[in-house]
Length: 226
Image (cartoon, rainbow, N blue to C red):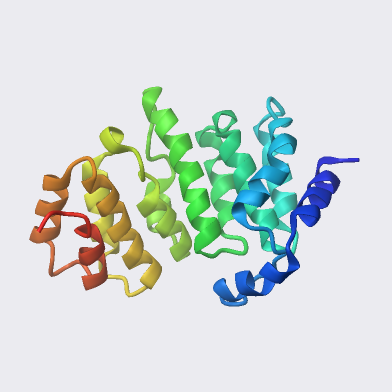
């Protein structure tokens, strides 16, 4: 029995069919679901994904592509779980493949999951002395707004590793956009950095209040003291 057969058995055993319709409605009926909640999904596939240690990045990406082709949304989430678990096997040369995968069946759940994986890969590269923003400048200008969202969010959780100049320039580059998911991403990225550098974010948001959308501005300062 191959990995994908085993994953199918594990997920179907963990499924609660009564959950499927509410999960589908939450995603605006864009995807079908088996009805497996996130904690149960992770538990059901944990051992199977752990067994992939050392298989190599190309094999991981092949597995992810096969999972992405499955109709039920849980399979894309399993692919993200797998890539996140084995992120140390990925490097900047795999970023284009990750971004290409993110564009397939794209919605905020899969895109944000991939943003975290891309960010982990790039932060590791930064700490090795490499380019911590590889491919992100191109993503920031990409016609697909989901890739622009990934570029805006890729430094989430970096704290002291955050390149504030890059973050603020990216926020201004996208500030004119009307797309909700871009405006939300700008605010989220700024708010996340504010946990590390609140004064810098406050100063930036105050100076550029007229350029930032009300949503981005409000989200950026959401946890700032009055």
